[in-house]
Image 1 (tube, rainbow, N blue to C red):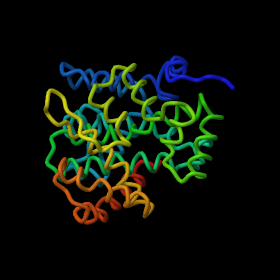
Image 2: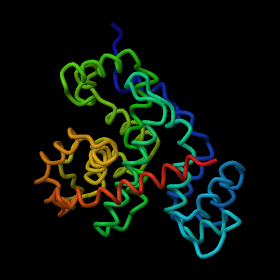
Image 3: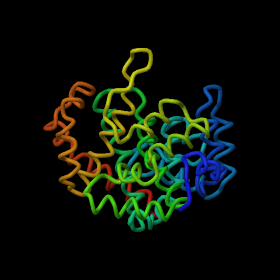
Length: 288
């Protein structure tokens, strides 16, 4: 039996799977506080397909802009840097995330649907809690499961075994992965995000998305990992009516209320809005 470690897997991965270099360049600029509108617009505009999709989405009813925007520069100015970052990442990862993950028995479209659902739920929770960085929550939710893509590509036999073990023992997949591999998709995703110089809080949000335990930096609670962890469960509970995920949320209700000040009834009350957001975004991005 071959021996796989977290690091000999990530050493095979040079970049986000199949994500165009244009995405990296745009995200790098967006993470630089000194980036100006013209620099960002120039990078996005260098890709005609990306430009067309950014403009179409910005002009959709979802954003409800008072007038039609015709250039990327206008879009960045009106919609904002943070929203453009979310759009660029969402657009450039769609084709890859829309594929099935055979090892996890996830069909075409299902992985993308859950990623979008988690992203929208995280953004909605951040807005509900009046957190400043709504788009950071969206991005963290969008890529929280990126480790699954890597394991499905580089450790397919082990993923099959983990999925089968999960079903046989009725345990979550990430726990089955730990039994088979000694690590899970959250650990792989975090290690890669760290290697790609993602912000530390985003790395921790990926690493901790199966744990709702509080995360502190210098004794200050960081809510992003908790929001992503809750959104991972809540989005699936709402979108697929998963009893298991509602039960898990209930088991962690004390932590959720302490961290976010929300009880289970309040989370349930958000379900219709979450469901509507998921449908709106899914339909919007899938349009050609």
